[in-house]
Length: 496
Image 1 (cartoon, one colour):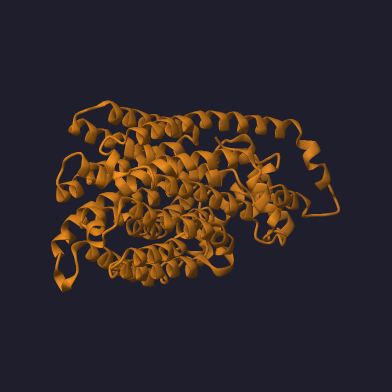
Image 2 (cartoon, rainbow, N blue to C red; image 1 turned 120 degrees about the vertical axis):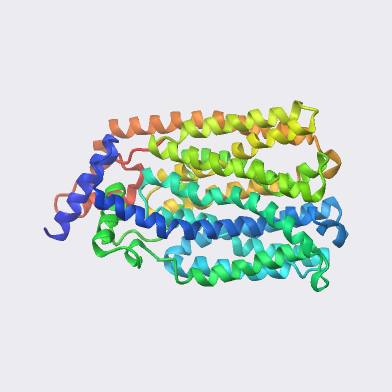
């Protein structure tokens, strides 16, 4: 079979599977190949993101351990310290995603992890407000590429139907890091005075050094592409290649037009489904980061001691971990993003409403077992939804980056929503969180309606859309159509 005929075969299979939405038969060999990816890629990415979230959010634990008091920070200054991280963080997300293919994820991601480990370690040496602000700004610039980079990276290893669970597997480490951070901080606090350093400084130093070690190890564990994996046999690499070409005909490697173009960034920015998910992820980011940074302080203000607050913060984050995995599993199994999103958001509404109305500190603490999963478990499903419906590569890279720009913009807002004087009720913030979670439910329904309408429109106008590419003399015309039209191709079925 020559190259063009082989590409045609891939194209026909890809169209059939996407257009009909009928899952093709997956062989046992193919399952084994995917399972090997799961065992060799996902644990590494999970550890990378675990450390990313741990090193970014551990300042909340350090605050309870005495950071704010020792440095003489006002509430306003502490909020500035949190906010300053997000500006360079957001600025770095899109450029890094566009550079990921050129630099190589096997180089970029371990380098990023190693560098921010050094910065986190230095954070434990600061003695002033100004020094902490500078270190947090550098931390944001270095950490920014990690989350969108991992999502884009995994989309090059897994099909659209498989992506939500794999994103959840690494993203769930965010809630796990919240739980682990509480336990770790409770233990590290006991090092107060060792080496003349306060306990909160050792939280940064020890966790930063561990990130440096993992970053160096990462250079030996992260393959650039499935074809570079040291753990797959050649036949398994071929199977993974076929799966990706079956799922996304535009990824066919011998098409020269799959190159960077500002047009793809613009097309991503003007896609209605990207805009809707951008807004939803902003809402999710506001609630998620608010809990990530302030949950130990919230528990502390409910009337629990500092050490007990660190330990009590573990339970809600552990609940978030399990709900995140369960939601993503069913999202992939039933190939549905909208229903899990709406259910999880409703869980958050219930939790925040409970927190708003109760006057009992134990009931208020119990509500956190609803609010944390209600915030954390949405993000992987929405991230997969964003990646699923954007093609080709650079449009997908842009959409994924925009999604995390939105999430982290919500993070900026969250840093100003928990002034100590309004605790422990935080009435205005809790009402805002309820509204944001409810808006996510409403926008989910709108997005489903939009995507369904777009699918119908593409079916009705298929011949008209493809007319410019019906050139019998050009053997690559149909592949050129996939590259130029991307997710607007009539045979690309938007998932919802």
